[in-house]
Image (cartoon, rainbow, N blue to C red; front, side, top):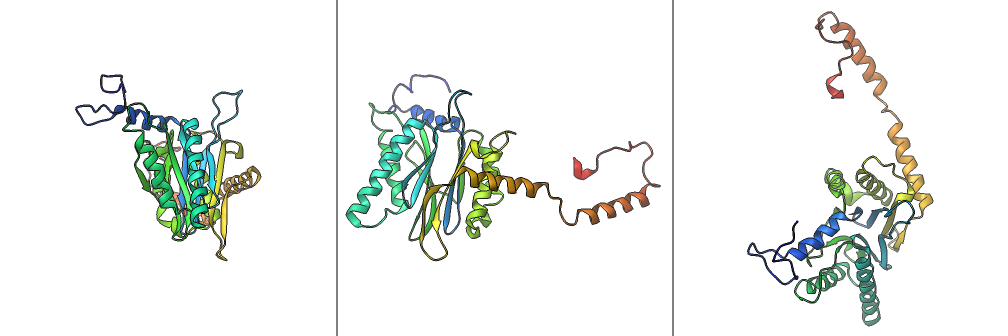
Length: 283
């Protein structure tokens, strides 16, 4: 993106019908550390990658609780995210005080979108440079929303935002159809796997990711929004790595049958082909 005569304030339209400052805010979301959200029928999980600005600093907090039944994960300008999380917390407290009931997640996402939209039509304001994944539980089940700096919001079964989030989206798109029947542990494992896709070879540990969960237990009681402690996260990561290292049960039988096939077909093999040529399944 380049500076031009149509990006001096947020209310100036370009001839192509674009608001460049809004697009710049959406670009800030893409530069933030990755966040992942996914939900089943009864639970919603948020995951965030912990990235520090340099080796001497700690990472910025990316997951915030706004009520017992809802929380947010953010990518982009963390300072803006803290302001918006406090706004959501106030909205939940006010609704509970007036109606003695939790604020529905859909209305929570709508109020956040309305607040973001106001900043796109006031020349003395700027758009919030942060995208938020809003996860929560209400009477209709678990929900996951993505709120964009433009004021748009969308409900998802699973979604990822932030830098290198496309790899996480690809992983989630291959598996999202089964999420509705997942247990909480299965959701957490897939959230960790999706975050791992965004790390570009960096080892996944409990120190570089944050996981939170909210949902409804089998007995009907609400499991409040909470951040899972690092010890449990590391145990889950270790079990995932151990499961990846275990070979499939049918591996010996398959290898022996392949060896027999190689022995019978050795006479008809091309003598010019190198002996260590890769098999098709290795390419």
